[in-house]
Image (cartoon, rainbow, N blue to C red):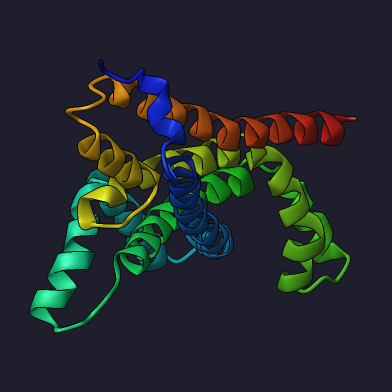
Length: 225
């Protein structure tokens, strides 16, 4: 008699392994998101430069990252660096590098769009008050930019969290990889294990991303008042 599929979650330490894999996913996501926010903010400011060369270089970087699939970038960083430059880099580090490059490009474009959407008198008023460029951005521009780009930034963060599932293809033992291992080890005894394992992973991704979306909605309403 075959075991019911849901039992696979509670056999041994399967559920704990899935949660540990989720921890790896969240760890990669959090580091990548934080780096992307910091670097993307600076990139967005740079993209508003009056220099045509600077704007051309940053636009090239943005379009290159957008056109290149994240999976290809993962392979280039993880396999390419190791074989061609003899650089020993872990799958987790490769994932953080790739997702940071992607997140920085996307966040930079969001910041650029938010800055250019501000009325010119915001800049002119700050300059008239004698504010330095740093003070102008820190006290006037950035606070307004944050309010304008929050919904798009939250959407980018949730996309980055979900896209981390690609790292399974370079051997990182995150939540999807753990799920595959459990399914493979129970393929004969519990044929329906895949439904329950992937269903659980889906719920876990929802539990991670949904509160982030709700927080964004709350902050957006708070800042409007």
